[in-house]
Amino acid sequence: MLPRFARGKFAFKNKEKYVGLKTPTYRSSWEHAFMRLCDEHPNVYKAEMIEVKPMSQITMEMAGKSMGKRKQVVLNQAKWEAANAYAKQHKLRFRVVSEDQLFHNGKRK
Image (tube, rainbow, N blue to C red; front, top):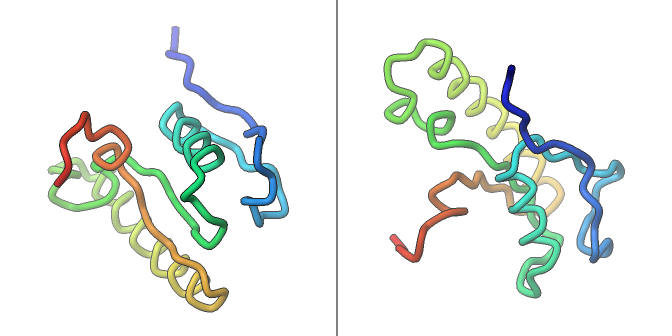
């Protein structure tokens, strides 16, 4: 039996922070935890676009020798270039967040 992953539509407590037209969908427990953090934290504003990805999909070094993971890194980098251009055009900030930023276990870099 395949493992069940967290997925669903996110229910906001602070709808004024969200500027999208559609209800966001989370596809992992990391995304859900991060959406809750952004929604509930008073220092998070609506001027950011954020994507949550595992480290193995962010850099070639972390992807290792797996061809599938390396292809995903290339695809993500192209997607992020377009997202950066869109964000700049709309005076937003775009950033990618990994498990290192989400779960730093008390250690700051």
